[in-house]
Image 1 (tube, rainbow, N blue to C red):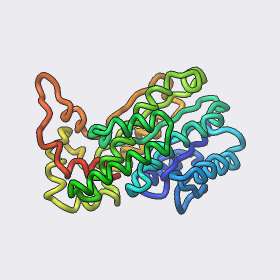
Image 2 (image 1 turned 30 degrees about the vertical axis):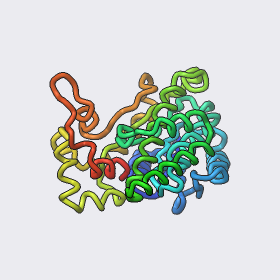
Image 3 (image 1 turned 45 degrees about the vertical axis):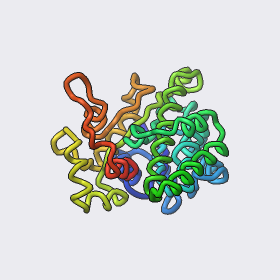
Image 4 (image 1 turned 120 degrees about the vertical axis):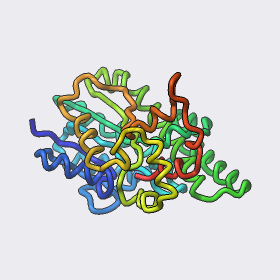
Length: 284
């Protein structure tokens, strides 16, 4: 089956690895990013989201088989706009094109940063669909951090993690709705751990930061993750082979989430609240 897959955030990191993986297997990929892509679009803005939808529609002859909403990260000033509203606009805006496919699929890329969400007012504002309110809460987070003497990286991690948690919850809710499940479109989330990408180099090149994270990843050989391994998972989720899996948030993190949340025989390590872990959660 010749499939057309849209990948956002396609110019680097996990996105670029996913594009390569798909193309090596004969899939036609429509790429989107701020640069070096078929569709140039800034998903942190309403104009950029419209440009994405229009650009993809003009290149796919009226139907797309799959969407991988991978674009994310970014500075704190646009984090909530990109990581939540941009991702949702991508999925919702391209859904009519998916509905015309014989085997439509969609996946959003999230992060272990969602495990550290602490601002439910930000999550609620996102899920309520008020971008202006969510931006206001994010600014409150920045103001509070400044008054408390915390640095900008902590603000970025807080906004990023809460935006990703909101994305997880939106996808979980949408997946079983008539627009998605009712139209035969599986929708899932992959929450990534720390992968060997340029965005994560500042951690991986610093043993003081990387070693605690490696110690908290129980699966031997899984730290750091390889971009091509994340790509293979994303590619399977949007393949025609995936006929049953939908509405799931899958942590592709070498067991980090499992160890963090613990259980009767494995209490969560206390060190996971450290700044190094939170920084890693936003690096992909």
